[in-house]
Length: 97
Image 1 (cartoon, rainbow, N blue to C red):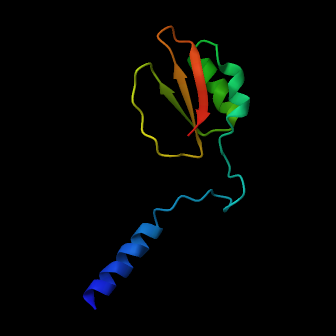
Image 2: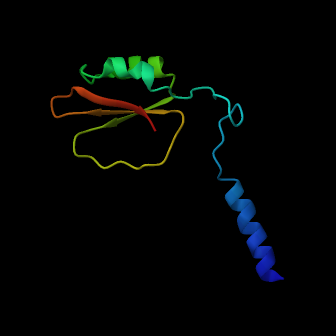
Image 3: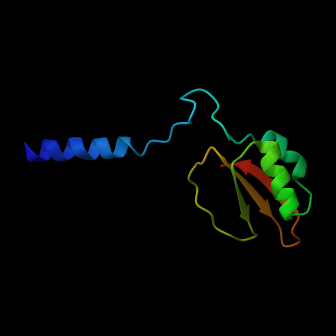
């Protein structure tokens, strides 16, 4: 009986960790990142102003800069734009993850 109760409690705790967009499943949430508009920044210099423009263009709430040769976590965040740049501070990738 205790094992069953512990399993039920664990399942309930894990259910609270599920990530669902604020507007519900299947619909775009506020600040849901869209990568396509961010592609126009590839080849531009990575600056604070460019970062602000990427946020505005993609609709993301957060921006993650990825310097060259840097490992990053692979967890999905629907409200985050990830910008990779090279040693010359030129943007190489803009993605939503």
